[in-house]
Image 1: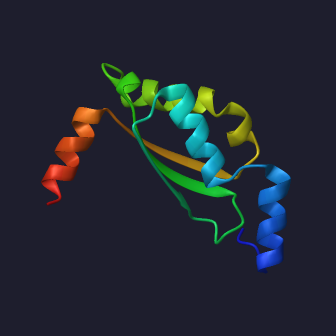
Image 2: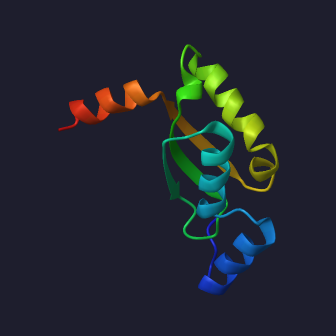
Length: 102
């Protein structure tokens, strides 16, 4: 559910401790992510995130294995939010995907 006011959104984010910046820092530090894009889809309350993660650690892993790696890395953060949608790519996959969009 989206926050009804800006103050409520800020309070929700502060109480969960989960911010896009925090998620990005953890992913870069623990997964050696080369690129991280995080979208807050919750209307500002910090409870629903979609994320693109580009990491060499995803090489030779299935989509499920990649998601499990991310979810175990962000176990505490995911427990504090409502919804989490990761999109995981290797650097090579990300370059191909970006090249196809040009």
